[in-house]
Length: 380
Image 1 (tube, one colour):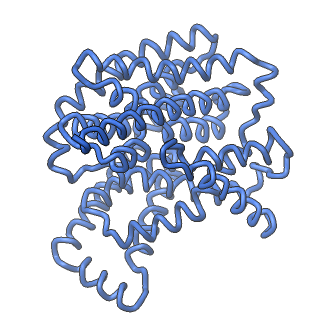
Image 2 (tube, rainbow, N blue to C red):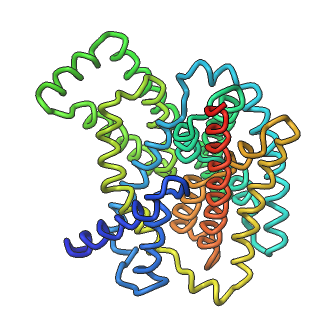
């Protein structure tokens, strides 16, 4: 990879904000980044080579930071959300049970062997996508708290479950690795909590802010990449390491200054590199060889929305149930890890991403409904 290629990748990443500039559409920035990668990668002009080792390593760094930021979005410290854990967990379990049946049914329908992966995809929710939409809409109330708890539980459970189902032959090894990563993340949480309670973190924060040292950011990245090293040594995806590190930081409360610094590194550099790389890796030409995979993508997306809408019968408003189906992190992880392990058939990665984009489209419609409802309430 050369500097000219890197400059092209960063420039292509700017298409993401251009796609998302209309806030009323609720289009995720990653949609434009994926589209740019698809256009200049294997599907389109072939300018970007996703197999380039430097490009791949930068993408892995981006993947780790993306999952770290996703973990920090889980509101583990919010006492209001904890009060809604009961109903949130119940709804997440209902979706999970339905997803298990639907996932294996879809695998049977399209003659694939990945029913367990589909089940996890259908059950997943994206806290990193849903929670900012709720905040932007200004939605409040018990329904919002229950939705937040449901999404947080589903997101966490599916991130843990995916490494176990994506390679069943090595599920035991993956489980041991997941326990090792979780144990390290818990130790990380205890150390950070001790530093917080002793006041050390605040003293370091003042020194770092006064002198411009960015010590907290540096420490966060050291811990994140150290946990990624544990994950790679124990044959677990860095997806789990990044998410676990994010949960540990969320557990003690991420300082706003660190959040802004991470935003700059993630959204300004590493995340665009990762999503452009992911788009470049997808080969939509394979749809021409197996057109049925287009149907698989739409069925995965529609199935995810359908199983989440079942919670209408538990009293959840339809707009919140549809929003809870939004998924990004888990499908991206499934495509990334599945491609590395060669467990997905040609074109199946593209189908999975198509399904995720269907849920994002439905979530955008649901978000508009929520925003309009909040506007009507404010006027009255």
